[in-house]
Length: 335
Ligand code: NAD
Image (cartoon, rainbow, N blue to C red; front, side):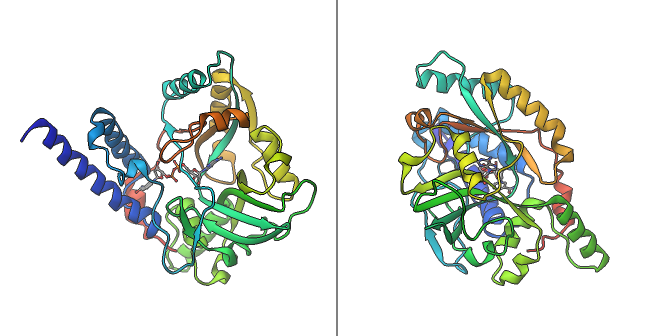
């Protein structure tokens, strides 16, 4: 076998493995390996594809977002794709990201970043027309998601009608639905006491709770929501020119914003945010697995644009892995 064909076999094996893990995670809400293991294989594939670009195929998991939408829900086509995020695992990778974008922007000044906790739940799109919530959808494969409007209407902190000023006639707000940790723990204590199945973890619990056919089940789950971006907007011109000010505007319409979100300058500001939020992590009532760092200036975001599955102007700088595979193996998942 030539080296080239050996590499091809290896790449195909990694693609098959990731496709299987994606199906278990996104479609069945039932992961069988820890995220750290998934991330390791994903990166191995990425680096082989980087070295052998002729072996990078359009259907590779490195070129795609998430999993497919489930047939049991109506499908929703996203007008603006819902992408994933590139990630940095160590400080040097964030520094390299910062250097790359400075070069692309031809800037030698410190960039302003909007720093957000990376909430460990499920991305959701909320479409408001004339201020009224008319549709809620999951991310799905980034182009087509699941219509979960009836379930989202049961989440108390998501307003059915927006209030306040400067609300575009048609506006899509995106954010994360997650389980409050006190509610998650109470749910699992009760499940154990009653000998029913506990949830494996808050992320999969949130995904399973939202993708229920009976909205009463969703209503009984302790779900929260924090907004983190806008999708389609009918009057872009009316919006502020920084990501943070847009989040504040969305917040003024009645949508919850994570209180930890902060604007900082340059690499040192980001690193300080990262370590402060890592210290606070254990005391938060929602699970986070890192930070998301976004170029704050919208014109710069537009200039930087997107690659296949992620924006160039944002990165998830993750915390070191904590989870153990035994946790996933020992507890069966309850949706
Ligand atoms: P991701 O979770 O790394 O990043 C994108 C997502 O982050 C967004 O869709 C959004 O839901 C979320 N997010 C949270 N806070 C945010 C914020 N403040 N701003 C913007 N987005 C925010 O990417 P992904 O594509 O959803 O999932 C990939 C990850 O999922 C992998 O890195 C892996 O850890 C995990 N995964 C695990 C398995 C497994 O089998 N264990 C399988 C597939 C994926």
